[in-house]
Image (cartoon, rainbow, N blue to C red; front, side, top):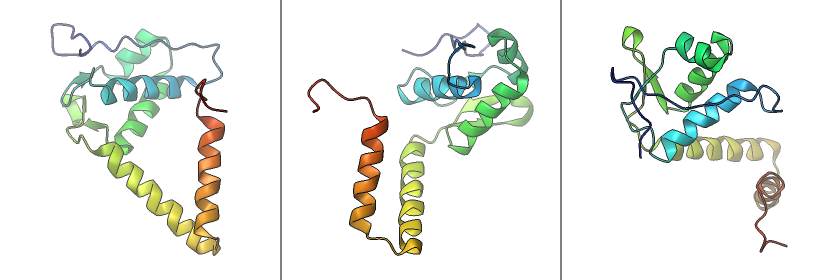
Length: 139
């Protein structure tokens, strides 16, 4: 299911920013859009609202929305087309490319430190374990 359009081709994102949350508003916006792209609710080519329009709708500063859009563009999930606005990028493998890049940077840093790669992988697994939600079956 995709997000609804407003009749003029603009996608209604149906986002909500919780001002009392510990997560910064730009992160809430970024993650909301990212989740919608990755689960298919925002397909490639979907046109997003202008920065100012979305900021007004969410009652946040335009710079907050601009930062979220900029980070999503850096992650290759959005593309800015000048006067034609911001759209969901057509690259379906953006997450895979970004993951590979992060892994290469991690490996390069471990080699720079002359650390044991196995110990580094164990540390990475421990880091994931500390931030990922635990399932009821996980000890």
